[in-house]
Image 1 (cartoon, one colour):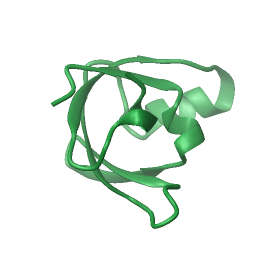
Image 2: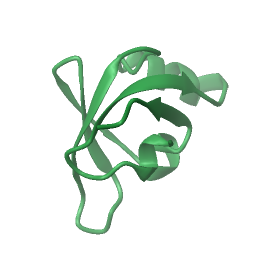
Image 3: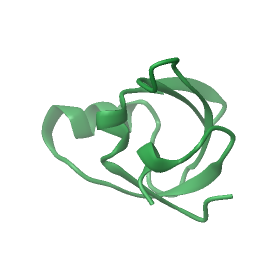
Image 4: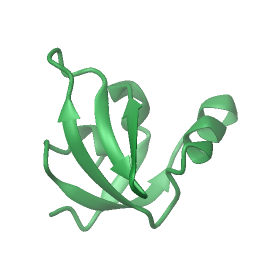
Length: 75
């Protein structure tokens, strides 16, 4: 499942991060790493961006960026 397909309140583990270059590096620098637990806190009113909680930090990502991240064990 892609991170962008998760609903508010769901939690999962990051399986892989696609892409390359500056965007891939930026995602990794924010602490979004393979194996990390991610929780969808909320979506903005127009569904873009979304707010995540990763390692206790609140992070906002555009839906386009979230579609590069694959998640498993979604609860």
